[in-house]
Length: 504
Image (cartoon, rainbow, N blue to C red):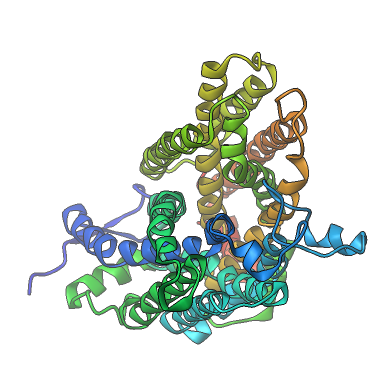
């Protein structure tokens, strides 16, 4: 076997200023191709089926589910999105099926992300998939609204762990400057699920009457079985770490050890310690990124949920409205993939996120200001909005993961960001109510305000991290050695190591 071509470098990577091993780039590219071919397609498939199961309620409603199980009023959800469960409780009214999903979803993201390593990724993630597939399968046999509510509650529990767990898993295989592109695949899968789910529903509801079951029941049953198959495959195919990955040979694993050596020096232990949780909660970065995420998620959830309604409000019929949503998502996915690629390549996040917040703000301003009769410019405004939304959301996840060192500090940071960020799912339905003169003034105005807040928040994040980087650059060798020998950085987290440099 050939010797792995390595050399010692002290300047090419600002992650580590001394004793940094740099792998032969040709060999590293081959390794990345292998990782991408064996991990990313499976991760994308997992997230695809999760989003299919999450969003099939609308297709089932169109196929006659409300009438068959006796739903009335907002028990399913209004045309765009019903009132959140907490408001329903406050008003002593019934919560709805859509909101109940988020009621459990936001509470279990942190626990699952923290349990990932202990329970092992292939076991936990496959169990989550089997869990939500069973929930969807059970929805095919419900008789009343109580059954629907129960299945949606459990669906929220099991799906809550997927995104944070998959994100944390990807960070264990890829270096910080490689993660944005790979995390972008999760968001692209979510976008693809919309088109694929519609086609699948179109075919499955035509089974109406087969075996004495309504078409919408077949939709739940078949998608539940599909997800279960993916869950079983995940148990056998998803690697827990690079040391046990079936697709990596001895030379590949040696390369992986060298790649991971940089991050290892910042984390004194990879064992669970409750101190890592408190470090994350005391870290201003955790709360700033979470604030930014709920701001951009308000735009993201609102846009993705209400886009057909918004476009229909321009004066298009229902069929054309559905068709016109497709190229918007294609543009969003393609643009995000390009941005994620270059963000990794130049090792920058804010340089893309901050300007794109302004681009999205321009889009919402157009939706508010352009004449309601000008269908072309209004439709173009949806492209302007989506240009920034998904890229800012996805890069925000990557930036947060990049900014925490140590497995459990990073897992807690990702879980906290997603928990707070996904509360936007409970907010979005409140801002898009009835249109005013054909325009969703409140929804667009709140979205404009939140994306502007995200602009300032992400700019603030850049300033904060730049301050820390600059401060460490100015340390003398004696000061650096004193910090390391005293272990003072451990009190705040491995990312406060004097050699650690934040990606800006």
